Image 1: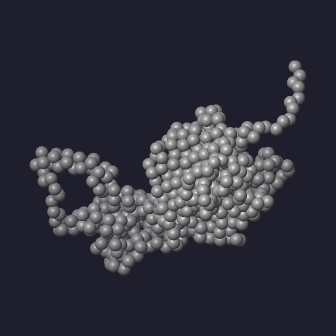
Image 2 (image 1 turned 135 degrees about the horizontal axis):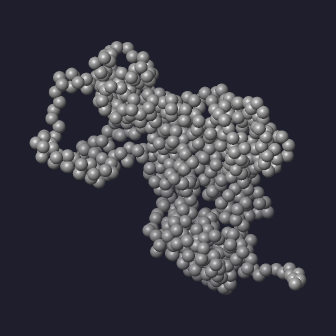
Image 3 (image 1 turned 45 degrees about the vertical axis):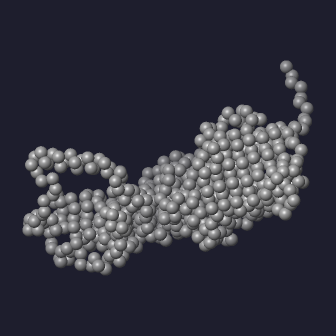
Length: 634
């Protein structure tokens, strides 16, 4: 059967708007984003958002911006009508610019817009019901605009079926609002509704406005563990705050990135952040941050995604290098600083009702009851100083060990360590042999006082105490030394006797060759061997035997997804981290006093020593005021 040719015809405006809505308006959160963009572009200093039913039943956004007159209000619900864009698409200085949002919303929902222009005698109101406009009419309103969206997707029931639960949609709206709030500290935001608790974000000003806004959105814990980022390269500015590696989350939802004030979620930028934290976090941990990129609008394309969530840079390598370099510099400048979360969790475990407190209380009660039944004293009896001396409980010295005033060789020598092996004392008190403790107290990590459970060093500072995980700390120190050596001398390449030839798609081979210079610095030498063929002449010596076919395929996949290839560097870092782990002082080794203090001094002088190679803290610091508070002394 022959099908007659279809006649080309123009689609109805309502159908065109619904097609556009399918791209622009994915869910209620998309509506909120578009309306917030309009409010901010109108110069609003106060914005109120109200939702019901996860935004499916109601979304109302009110602002005190410039407002619209009658003519502007009539045009704003027509497609491609906007006041924000000139004839130059490369000169976009506003959040919105296409003129598609309001007509798209009106085609799939019941839309009401009431607006009053500044210094105008009256306001005006227009309704759009499933794509059908009602005549404009006067309305009472203060300066600004109120946009109300009801029964979202009632005109497209198929889209409505794909929405998630009310709670999930409400959470998505909250995330959109938070991104707008963090991007504009000078604006007062209020979020409320029948499907949520009201949240108020007052406007902040001053030199620390952004940090205070971060505290409102990301919590006070973030500001306590935030690193300031401020860098510039070839006219591209980067500023904001990023968390210490030890302050991380299980997903990237707490990463807020802005390009010229626009909140974006771009794989290139996310990949740059991942590369910057590569030495400190696993692939399953993500730092928290708020970063702002300021760039000439002509050098970035924001018109590449219907929801304007992605951007394309003319020089993506420049922006990536700026992000990676600035974040690594901020982390390095933090030195041995570690997250405050560990101390907070430790303090909470000591408080009544803290982790394990009830179980510990029950265990103590049971133990005392058993001791009483045996006729034992339920509390420890005083130790005789003579008995303690005879049993060598001073700081873990055996009778054959040299005395405290005897010179000791530095380092973690196995011969010195062996003398501790027959001793069963679980802790080592070093105070009687530490003569320079008063000078060390003023240092950031203080003076070593004891070694507990053969793994934790307890140090005293001027205003508190520090507990160090000796293995994790030394592992980071060894790793940093190895990285410095690799950076200074490069990664040695192991030349293959016979180059390995790898066939792949032509576009994949071209991706690899584009990064050949970067791979060369890491000991991986690639050359073109014809169309779609790569010759591998050298592989990194640190990696040992390499499956070139698999390695190159993984590199291609990474470049395609992230726009960069850090897999080789990650593998080399992983080998270095493994070598550092096996080459560092192990848990269970009893250390000399000099060794403990030397470890503390090395941590103070080594960047990134506040976290181990896996992003966990290497030490926890408790302030004296916090300890006194536990005992009710303050």
